[in-house]
Image (cartoon, helix red, strand yellow):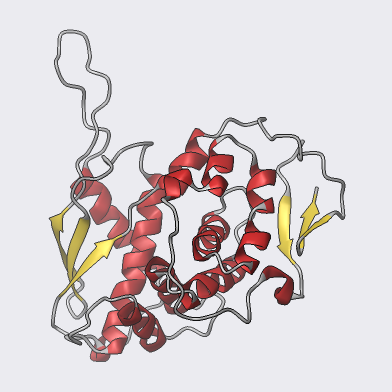
Amino acid sequence: MRMPVLVMCSCCAVLGISGVLPGLTARPTALETHPLVAAVRRGDCISAVKLINPNVALNDAQTAFLAGRMLEEQICVDKDPEAATAFFAQAARLGDSKAMLELGTQIGLGEGRQQSYVEAGKNCRSAGVDLSSHLSLYSLGYACTLQGVAGRLLRTSLPKDAFKVGTEPLLIEFMPASASIRIRSSPDVRRGTAPTGSLFGARLVDASHAIGNAWQAAEAMVPKPDADRLDSESINLAVDVDGTLEESAKRSQPGERGPQARLLPGDVVNGWHWIY
């Protein structure tokens, strides 16, 4: 059976996109223990998607954030940047700082919102980046858009379990005017199985090389900035390489879909249409 394709319905009220209360706290549980992540890990995409709309309607910021990631990174569903933006905006309104950064990335890319590095910068600052205003909103928005795209590329392309959880964050110093970067810290890299006669296996990835490549690729993917508006001040950016959701998708077993897998064409699940 083919993987189901999800298409947003025209009535966004069903999805809990509007009418939410601002200022609520996000992340009630760790991503590892979230039921949606668990469903993705066991390959049960049907159950994963069924969790989204009811929880989002109850102002669950974490579920809205995960839904945005699924839609943006094509996890269990077709890639839909505009729908991803709507879910990131929902989670951001509920106070989720990671969602604010993701929303800024979407605005910087012009996906689901009019492209604007200034507006992207506002979201980035709301998430707690550059609170001292060393950079203009334009430069900050450009930097944070690169930060978001580079993080996505790393989370989705690195080998499974490449970075050790709970080690140093990925911190990059970036100067918008010169486009120069310096890696200030990065997570520890795991090693593969040690070959016979050796105590240590090879590292799963060359972190510096992978990070540099991801940043360079991000620069090619984002809208070209106005060079005259870019600041020569540098900024430290924490790149999100928490691949809990992405790792779950990599671990899922094809064919293990669970009891809800045989939905009929045209069935509607809380505003999502399943199409085979």
